[in-house]
Image 1 (cartoon, rainbow, N blue to C red):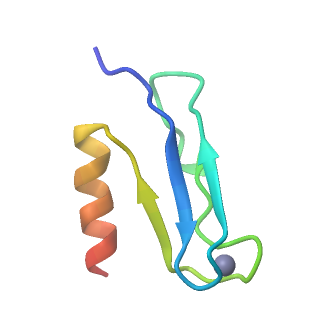
Image 2: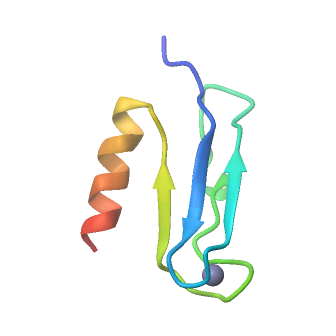
Image 3: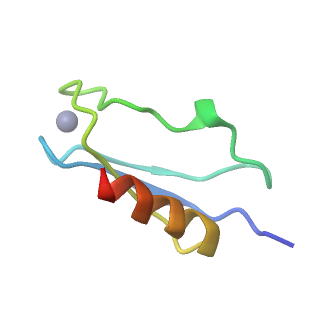
Length: 63
Ligand SMILES: [Zn+2]
């Protein structure tokens, strides 16, 4: 069982941040913004404790 865990999205450009709390086990691709709603930057940092998504976060941080 994978429990949905809240994750925090932080913008590297303007320090905008928002905490997302998934309602279900499945995180839809549309649930997380690709751009910062404040400055439009795509330099977003995703933080989550979940193992799978932390791997994703690492991949995204490599870009
Ligand atoms: Zn921003």
